[in-house]
Length: 449
Image (tube, rainbow, N blue to C red):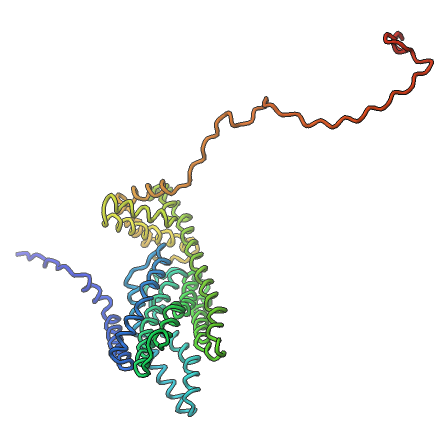
């Protein structure tokens, strides 16, 4: 008697996640518990809670900003969660342990605790912290290359990692400041907690993301480099890491430049660097939209896309209108389907662009077919929304000019103004040979030819 195969049991998403990412989750969870214990030991329970409540304030804004930069080709949330957890747990633990050990060793070797603290802040801390944060960028670059395709991906991965690291570091600094105020009795705007909050949360919440973004840009340019330029792909990430360490060292050592050294470095270096990098990332994002508009028309010719889709998918405003249209007529499921369609189409455009430059890899055909099949399954929901968005955002067509607006060859053209008449000159006096009288004729009038 034939036996039936066992009925497949349904696995939940958390079970699949644990099977695939069990080791990293375990490592991050253990490092998170250890770092929480260390921070609580240094700040006390009340200081830890105060620091936690104040340090969490800039986190949603920074994560939302990096997610906004990644809207053209959004990466999966699991990558961002891994990066944030790595920065907040693993990188922070490595930094605290390594910095404390190095500072103590320098103080013991030199018998100069003040000099050891300065050397640790300006030399040891930038090297250790930026290396620990760069490890997350390296892991995503190596094991999630499908989601790491350019500069924007490098900026987002590095920025979210640094946001997690700054979150834990702010808990430590703010909690320690609160403990100092408890001992001295200071409160209000004159307290150490208020000063620390102003510097780290109000003035420079972007400091750590700004440093580590340089490392992400190095990895992003390496991801864009052709496969034959192996030297560039090897040297660019370390170059970005060295720039991040240098900027971090300058920021940490600004207090050694005098009373106003911190503000001088902040105004003359940090703010311009932040503005320049912001412009670079936004410009790169616009180039990505241009790639979408350039590469997708090939699939219009092949019949996979409608003529209006490349224009709609190459405009963030049109994408938003398409999702809103789907949500209004179908619901949240329709909006999510349109968002997936936009993500698949963008990945397809980037894949084709890499293929034209010879960097698509051996799985180009299989990946292209996979993306086209995904688009085909979602076309019934996404195409009407994208067509509507293309019509809503298309530039107005030129209006026909009525016939009477054209100049007629018989149109009245005014004469140019006449020149002023010259004054009459007086007549010459008559001579005797000159005939007189009103009926006199000239001498040649009766001459025969």
